[in-house]
Image (cartoon, rainbow, N blue to C red; front, side, top):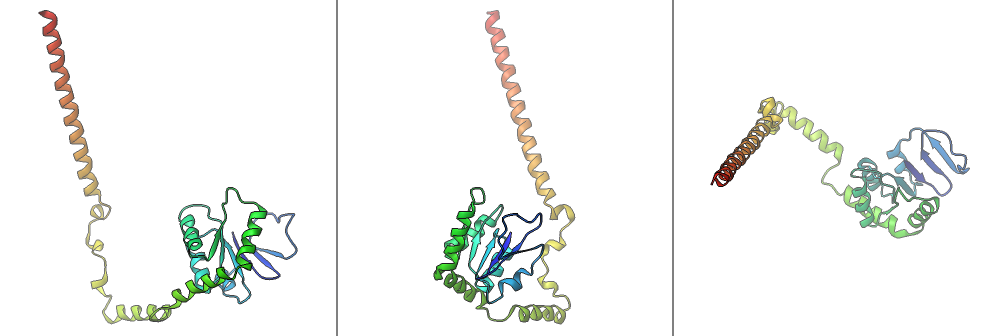
Length: 204
């Protein structure tokens, strides 16, 4: 779920039947240019599930977040942003309209969230060169050095079974099988000796 909060309007990326309780200030869209929306000067907050792309876009534009992580790395992303004071974490399993509203009010009415988001944005923008210039440099670098073979990973020289570590897996499996067979053989020999000793005692 992606949501941008303006003073008067909510834009919600949503697919499905329009909710009956939808407010008059909320507009639903199947798709939104999220990065452009976050870069709009009137965008005040961003409700997100905490995916890496959305979090980085919010950091880039200095927009505080209300995070509702669902799975995977999203919990870590939102926890990190919460720790930095640029987001409020809402539990998806126990979420309520009141809790979401309180989280939004906290982000909108507390200047610290915006200040912390802008601080992260300043750090993110502080680079020796623009990303486009860096991309152009490396493209020209590869062209100048005829493919830049010295930068290619050595993994390209491996055979397919080496690349997938099948030789290592085969060796480990062989070791496990050998040890297992030896243990079984030892147990069998010990049990046989134990049975022979029992038989001798019975005869005596």
